[in-house]
Image (cartoon, rainbow, N blue to C red; front, side):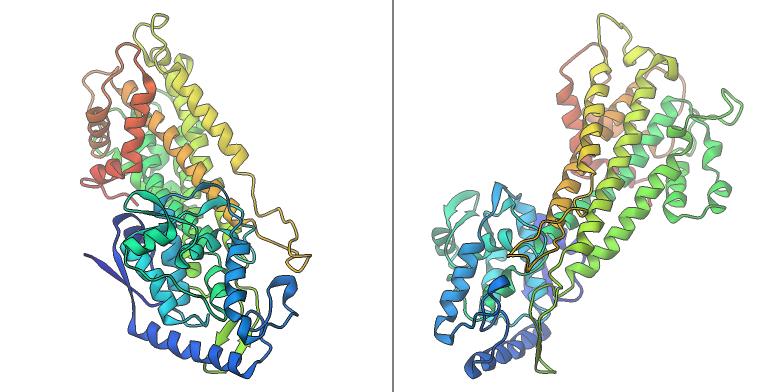
Length: 507
């Protein structure tokens, strides 16, 4: 079984995907173990000395001024978890739950949180054995971190709440027993260490970003096929045009289009058929490229966040100092995930407009709604409706969550990020956009089928063949959602990008 070593400092997006979706095992590094043990000794000493330290010998939030005796430490930590487990709504998907657990392990492995090694190893074992807590998707304000949803994760560590084990919903105590994992009794600082952080929003956002990197390539593939179905003009993608406005995403997109369309006889030059194309064709590098640059920015922020200490207070072992700060505040992620949602929504916007160009005979030069017997058959008429519906929904979802804040904890926590809402919205936008692109891929392939004796490009030929292997040409009306789902599956599984990249490397 493949294994990822967790050191708190070097986790990557690819490793998150491997652990979350391919069930790679995880193991703490020797350096992380040493840091954790040293850090814990500081907490134990503070408790023994009965020092007044937030979260160790005091209550939480507005109750931070109330001192708790060492005899009540275990009760304090359990009460924290059960009172904070206020999640609402449907459970998060399994891969997201696994990512949450992984990111919490990685944050605690940095050695600033005061957790016991045995407690952290319980979470590691749950991840490796496949004990997946039921974590409701709603209830986090994104500061102080993801308190409510993370509390549901910790409930299972304590043998309370519910979990999925080997595909079955179970009482947590039974799931832990079947997996041969002993539930923990939390002690000083541990409850706070486990729930005070941004791991829920970051897990959702990180997996969404990982998927969006694939979606950016899909958008270039779909656009290339539409360009051929529309006999688009290649001159707009000349590298000289993009070198004089050198945004990296724009340049990368133009390279992708040129490589995909190499050897295509569908593609025209200025003046062959028309002097210039509409913006949705001519400006593909500028539109897609801006989203590529946005995704690159968000990735930079996520890589920082997944390797950060985000709880409070932080215990600095060498300095023998405890500092109560605000690393739990989700604002860096909230803004990033709002930006990600906007960037991906734009891919759907432009894709739907290209679909409209394909189905509209006044714009396409093709049969109306891409059907040979219009009237008897509706063809792609309502597929465009569905795409338009998803695009409209995206516009609502793209409204930023981070511009809102509702004070909590009697105004002690008087500005919150709403970062988890931003991450969830970005994920929904990703799913909608993938389906819009699936419709464009189908419509473009249908448009191409009306031409005779033309040659597709180096990359578009593979894309066309991959689509046609799943979805045949629409000769007469049939149940369209089945075709859309098949084409969308090529996107969600990565199979279409994988097929194209066997011949053409996409940036």
